[in-house]
Length: 211
Image 1 (cartoon, rainbow, N blue to C red):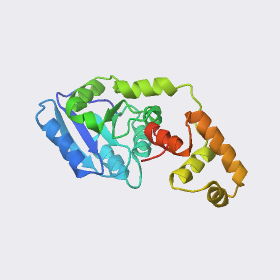
Image 2: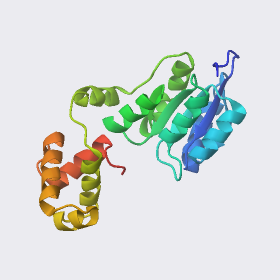
Image 3: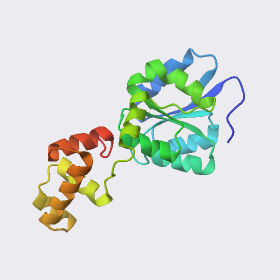
Image 4: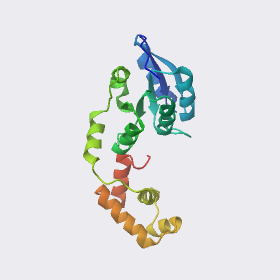
């Protein structure tokens, strides 16, 4: 799909919260050079409506029931590799941002800054520029070379966040308690955390775990 060369930028708004989509509509209705052509509340709806309307810019929420935003992006970009998608999210974590950008997002917009930056971000992305908030970009740069967590370490950390003890986690995962402790030592080291609670807090902030 090639971006439209008409004077009006066609926008697809994707979010499972009505208020967010209303906010997008309200911000855009005053702009003569853009219009919301469709709205979706799920990832699957986003894919279907993208194929129907071929928008110039898609605003894509990350956390939605069923197909999440990143999976919807991947499906869209597989068929329309030049689609321009801006992730619209409450999460400023570097892991979530890096994952979205790696999937092919053109921009990353925090919902808390939407009122000030939405319209400018749409215009910049439509013009072919990438747009990432400074604090998100700084987070990505800060942790770029740091160790990532393995799938098994993430599973342990999710169970820790849910309140599981080492013994219960080991039993649920079919591994020994000492193995769980070994995973926790690696997690604390990689996240530079002081203890289990600190590790969960850092993981949530950076986007390793969904809030």
